[in-house]
Length: 472
Image (cartoon, rainbow, N blue to C red):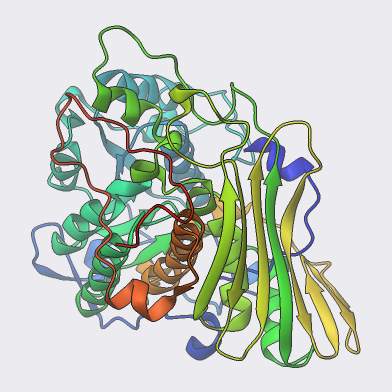
């Protein structure tokens, strides 16, 4: 993922739902009364829940100032999914705000839990997503009794007395884990994407609505929405500085090598299920394919700019160089045209093939100008020159601030719709059929879940063939 920062980025326009932004412009900020749900489902005051201030965003001009009472209360964090991203995310969370402790870890595999714990209990290592080397080993309060393994580890983490759950397992599991966390009254940070099929998306939408009624926060790992240079450009796009939006392009076109992309050689002792879960990126049922797992970032930017999701997708793609069976059943390239309600058409390109030109970014075309990352060209030019906080940390700071401020963010619907946009593109590409949003959301019965969640036999689904793979 570090390669992403070295490649060309044409546009990025993301947001954070901070205090001075309006609900209609930047998404849903769920107002919360002075009561929040505690660990046991009891109603406790916000002051009783947690005191103290998160990292101040007022200095960035992103939120209004607010006075917090000093105190020693802490937000207790549990991590579900102890791979590379989970380990990075939990460090981003602690780095972002004071009075945060890591108290529980869960993963299907014991060695993943042990590897994560060994990293976070020792200061000095710098994760690619962090601003500085890790220096908060003292904030790790994990014990042998709060380390959990197995497919039910998520439920054990939820039940371990935590306040905030970080969900960083393979995307297939996100709807199940989110539902359990919200029903248990926990705030959630969840990595993108948030599902791999329409059935999962419907679940995430339902959980997001439940979170609103419970006054719970949901923040997603679409970090561009927490980056000021994206926020300021998008604000101007929505204010009409480039006129009516007529077209656009988005790209995650990047090389791929065997060592990149979470690949581990199969061991003789591994079952089919273990092999697939450890190499989850290469199986559609686990990752959603790279258009969903990776390109969702760019599609999220486009949806944000357009203020809605597409109504139609028509795609093409295939598996040209990723031919070895150990690389599962995902494609290595996609090209999708998305049509939006105003008639604008957006070209989406995603590719993972080595030795080719690379491009990562977004470009939004209006009647009087063009928006790209940090800048606008046209009748009302703009170039962002303000602060540039680390967005991987900022998203956690914003989440924790919103909890402490009594106005928990709820990004569930927006990230669900962006994930569904990517799923729609994949469904169209796999089947070779133009795909309507309404049909996919309301009528599709596509559910990629395996027959059972247990380590054992699990045949790999065949690679999709456009024109032959059926609609479901």
